[in-house]
Amino acid sequence: MAKAIVGIHSLTAFLDEMRDFARQAEADVRLPEADYQLDFGTARELFSELTPARMALLRALREGGPMSVYALAKRAGRAYSNVHGDIARLIELELAAKDEQGRVFVPWDDVIVRVDASLMGEAA
Image (cartoon, rainbow, N blue to C red):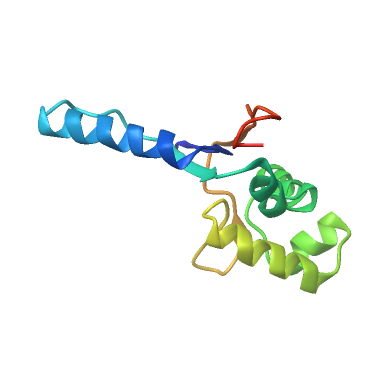
């Protein structure tokens, strides 16, 4: 399994990377297996999606393995409806997933959050 890397990335930097990938693909350069990259345009966007409560759910799932949303809510000491909403969003972001039995889990070896933002620049 790969890692999920969450960070801040400007549209310009994203387009530059895509151009580099296109050049490599045209040159038949073998690309390495990629990690899952989830980028947000600003730190505000990142932290509005990856809240401390959602990060705690990801940690609980990594520690406890696949479990029902009910069991996760109980483990986290939170209301089922709030955990259900947070897990639904984490699944949309592909940071969590459901198995065949309907249990939720983290499909990554690690989830890394990178925040390297200038307080004065566009990424802040």
